[in-house]
Image 1 (cartoon, one colour):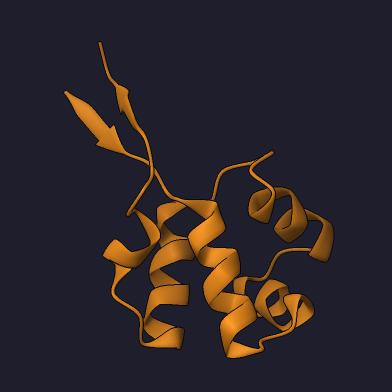
Image 2 (cartoon, one colour; image 1 turned 90 degrees about the vertical axis):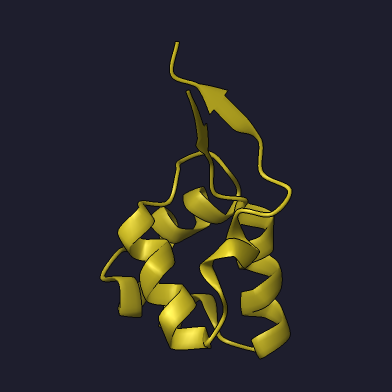
Length: 75
């Protein structure tokens, strides 16, 4: 069974296109700016709940943030 992963470049692209400062996103998710930078760079993964919050805030379908993402097998 495959699990769809979050495509962090799509989140960064959407944030940038909307002109939302990284600090505002970090505050909204209640994480540090350093933690957000790690997630946006792919060093750490976003939690699904974080992506859902961003999707709702930005009025963006959550699928936008999984398009182009790779799938991992649970095998």
